[in-house]
Image (cartoon, helix red, strand yellow):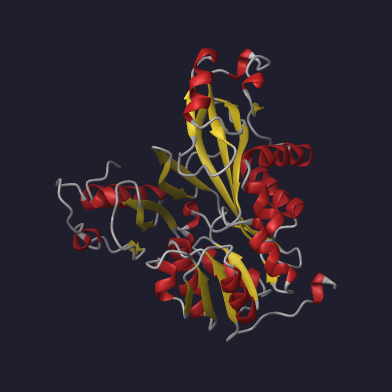
Length: 393
């Protein structure tokens, strides 16, 4: 079938989303705003996305009965996280359902080894590649490693996120213990680079090859978890903007991708740009789009999977986003609700809570978009809001 002539999937059709965490919840809200009904598949009975969807299939992602029920109901299906089994996406595609992104795209992001190989291939066209690295599958891979990979970061090939599955290896003699601590699984050893700051590019690609890119976000992480995202990036040289956006759109094209794709980059002290990893879904660093752009990343996910025209990605205001972790509930040593009234005393602060059943240390519970006429104003508001929540700015 000619992709340019595939019909749009119009409301009130059912859309399916695999995963009902906070990303699934925000997707559901946007889909419903456009007039769609949503079916969430998530094994958690207290799933935040399942709580607001028209239908919640509380089952595992390989549950045959649930998959059949979802396939019979939904006209198109997407995912909110990359660790859903790729074969589940393949199953739906085999049933004639439009899947965006496809299982083949998601599988690239599920394995760092495959991902690094793919990004290395893209470097030939984009000019931006991954950091120097080596694959480790067994102890026999230790000896041939070049000395200049140390100090490095040892990362598990699969199931790593928010800083999990990573160990810093300062010198070669620390590698054996680090690998054993990670369970002797397949890993990537990545050279530690002189990092100046981190940015991410959020691109959206339609079924017809149409592609749009949001303004680049500058990100600060703490303990491997995103802390703040500021847009536009205050540190990025203007000359690097088209290079990063072009590389991100090329990555999406080379994957045959449909949907929202986040590509994370390191900017080094000498302004060299390194591609870190990809996330085949809406992304934490793109939450600013909910209040600062014409079209949010979640509406774009709906548009792409329903084969609708993509929305405008213009930035309407400067913004600094603050992640809220469960730690904010325990600042006094006992669990208590944070002072949201003080947060909302800032007129430009847009609070988004995820409806999770209980706060836990390190658990993402919500975010706040602080808007400003200038970058400085947005960052100042973000710092003040963080102070109200006893979060170091």
